[in-house]
Length: 147
Image 1 (cartoon, helix red, strand yellow):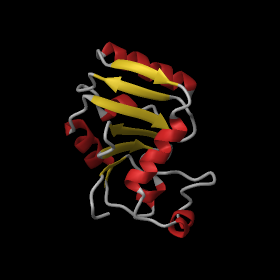
Image 2 (tube, rainbow, N blue to C red):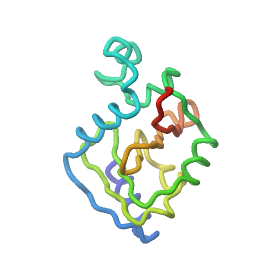
Image 3 (cartoon, rainbow, N blue to C red):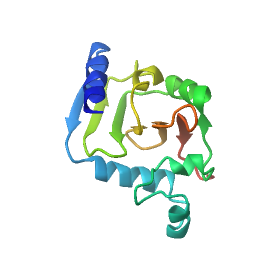
Image 4 (tube, rainbow, N blue to C red):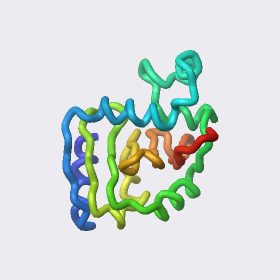
């Protein structure tokens, strides 16, 4: 996976995206993602969808516990989104990428990534590519009052 991350960084830099790597922020951003996109579930519900303990945050989508777009619709929604500033982080890694000047960022850029989360600066929307893409995901969702 580390090799894929380096390929992603190279690809983004070729697109003139400013990429900053921030070590050890993964824990913080995964928690913020959960607070933004899974805050409507209580601890028992989170446990029932295996959100923690070797589970995945994206289970909120695969277990149908939040509104989302998937597959090509997710890619299209992500591609249309304004992306000046984004965070990119992974389920199982603690390194985070801060992307600036990311307007040309597309779903295709993440085709070789697994369990990667992309969010805007305010966590208003998210794009997720899973290790089970094709069966589960990719997903796109917006933070809103009705989940």
